[in-house]
Amino acid sequence: MVNYQGAPLEEQVKILLEHNLAYSKEIYHLTKKIRSYLLWGRIISLLSLLIFVVLPIILGVAYLPAIIRNTINKFVPTNVGASNLPDLLGGQNINQEDLIKMIQEQGGPLNFYQKILDLNNLVSRI
Image 1 (cartoon, rainbow, N blue to C red):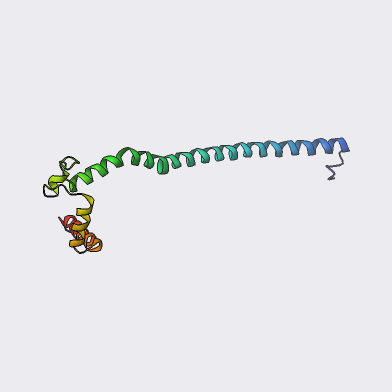
Image 2 (cartoon, helix red, strand yellow; image 1 turned 180 degrees about the vertical axis):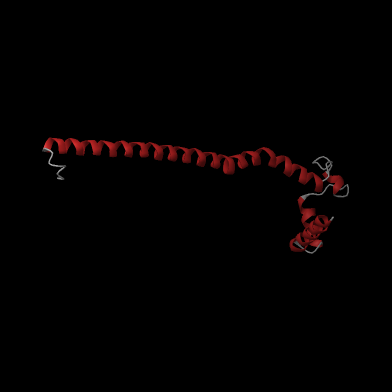
């Protein structure tokens, strides 16, 4: 133990306890600041999670169906429905077998898909 100018042992212990108390108070204040800093860090990270992840998902769910519907309506006429589908096929009542025969006459499914892709490319240029 450090001898403080010849002070008795009780005085030395008292001085050391006062120093220890001062250090403990300083550590307590620093701990409060660190705790506050961590709390605000959690709040900011929660807000950023809400802003950058949850909010776009909610907005996507809310507005994406309308955007998709508008985009589809640009390419598909609004009067297309199950009731006038035979009119689109030339006024004929076409069943599945006849449709398969028509695709085969056009050169098979691969050629048919190629024509659909060509039509899509043509529409996208317009």
